[in-house]
Image (cartoon, rainbow, N blue to C red; front, side):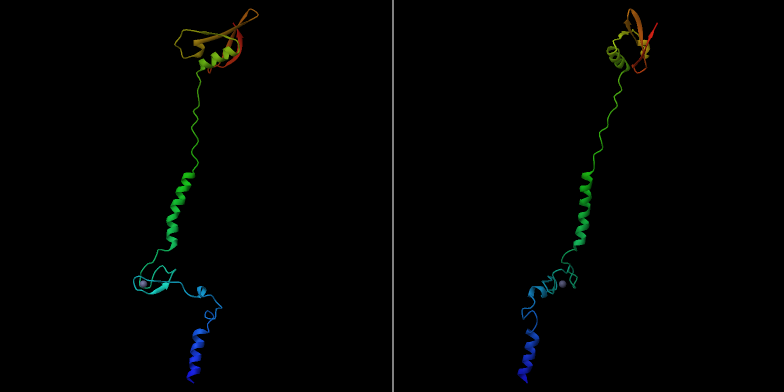
Length: 148
Ligand SMILES: [Zn+2]
């Protein structure tokens, strides 16, 4: 009777899949760590022990901490605002001089302090001994030709 009982114990203890080599021990045995506070064995992935000891803060929190960094990178990637192009306003007197030169007009400058371009300048050209006056606008652009 005693022998058969021992056999039963042996069967229970050792006739397990792990013992018989059917399942590798690493797959079934729980990887444990010891709590430094209560010396209790807990699973390695346990973040908080039953005694209240915190092994590590869950990874979710560290991910949240990472998020602002990603936003910082996004800000760096921001497209810089295009440079402001200043509209160059040319002096009508300069335009008139260029126009007169191109169209073979003779530019005459009158000594006046008037801001009116027509008071300051007159342009003319002679074609077949006939003198023609150039007609120009406020911006100094020659727009036509006339005869006195
Ligand atoms: Zn503990």
